[in-house]
Length: 255
Length: 325
Image (cartoon, rainbow over all chains, first blue to last red; front, side):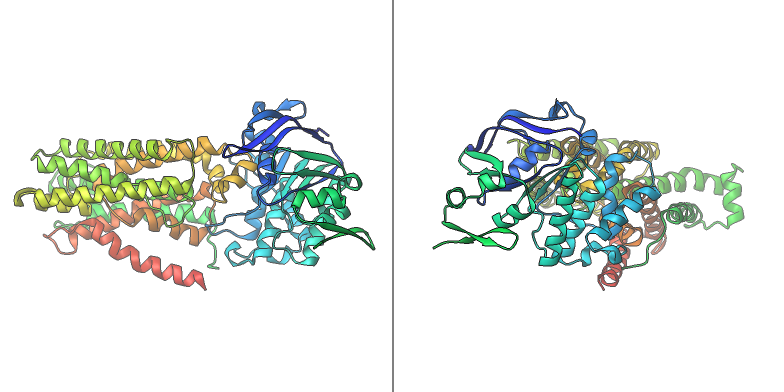
């Protein structure tokens, strides 16, 4: 499998540098958590890594080639993004929407093959939505929409998965289900990068962490190295206490 | 959810409907023809029937079909472009520009081809202005495009009112008719049909990409669509289709809004099916409406735009309330 790599990457929004000189490789089999305050550049970084946004400076490489040299469609067979929000102004069913993930793999006139359908149905089953495949997306709840977006990404079947707050809107059971699923995908050799707001979840489901301070500084390393009271306190601008939990550290806000 | 029609059944059904609307348009009128007489006339048997059918009714019916198809196709594209199911071909002010151009020509007392040219250049000016202004600072969002278009449309609307106020009585009736949509001036239908064919050929290869763009730019980009290029392409094609439709038939409302929406409710949002289906259904609707417009209160001709609205509004509202349940 091939690696997604940032080289000298600088991100700026409205003239403000969020992240400077990021050099980092997201190797196959690694599960990364992306932590930072609101507006620190997590979404901007994910969009840049997937090639939907031009960096201020530096480059992103996949398989040794700069993203700008890839054709958009070919790239979409390797890099998948779970956007923070999805729009669905037009009527469509749940299964049709999940099948959109097959788009980069299909020819213009190709009808969805039985394999495509099987993949989409398996993805829907993975997010507990097998029963809802004929339902209109307009009639889904917020959490169901989120799970449908996850299913669409799973259907895309990409080697790198970039997830923008994957457990937004999800209840505890489905949140855990989604995180476990992505962790398993990383263990099977994919690269997973997800932005999260709970360092405890990062400690439990990810093995590496990228901290974005939002002022150009960043830090990356293993969860044990990165997830310290000191780092997190500075990251969020609020004291954080680490507490030992049954499955590893849990982080609670301090005074 | 309303039961879905299979795409494979929908297209042949709509093709039959379109054919039926064209045949009805050829047969109906002050000289009503039986099917046998109609086919004899179409076969070229000399006589009054042949002249009426081939020289009067056929060009008008084909123009109506082309304009309906153009509007419905442009509507389907605009809705995806703006991410809004309520967008129609006129929302970005193209028809306003065309109307100002055409009314100016009518006001100056020129007729025929100059009115057409006025409408076309008015539409073109509007397209260039809206796109130039919406993109002037590099930021391209559907909202910005929509706002620019809506503001331009409002400006054109004021221009239209100004021209109507200044107009002497003689050209006023013609101007009002033009504004309400009027196919009685239809001459050679080849141009409209050619633009329609080009429009279909230029958009059908992107039908799959449209399915993704309908889910938002980000999702489309992440799934392999070159969003910026596609949006520019869609804007230009949809605007030119609208310009052609307005030039040929004046501003005819509701076809571009209702037809794509209705088809989405009936058969889903796969644009590989939706685009050709919109062309057929839009063409059939406008052909039928125009036939009704010239026969319902004959010899008085009604503006076809009034009829499309009268037919379209109840159907649309019925479907909307039914599907909302």
